[in-house]
Image: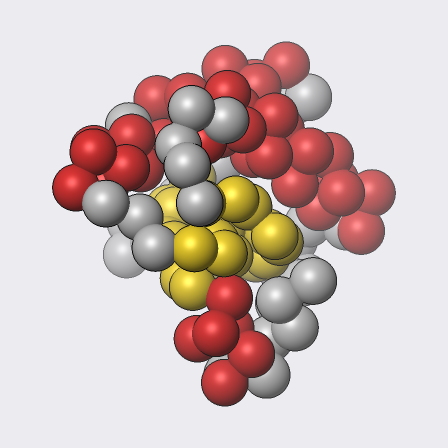
Length: 107
């Protein structure tokens, strides 16, 4: 899912930012780990750039983990700013098995 507005080098930087930011939260969660991150660039209905970020998780998040996931944008934005990316991140989470079924490649 590589959008035309984000080159491969920037996608790799964005993936590292996402993993680094979310890893801190998921390190404290048993049986859940990030196995991949997909990044695509798009525009919202106002024409502003957005990043569609899909985080592939292995394991089964519990209610506590869902609260961690809901704060992901707040965790990721400072890292994106440091690498010069100002598009707003739209983050979704998908299980490894769902990614495999969709043939996204979970790893």
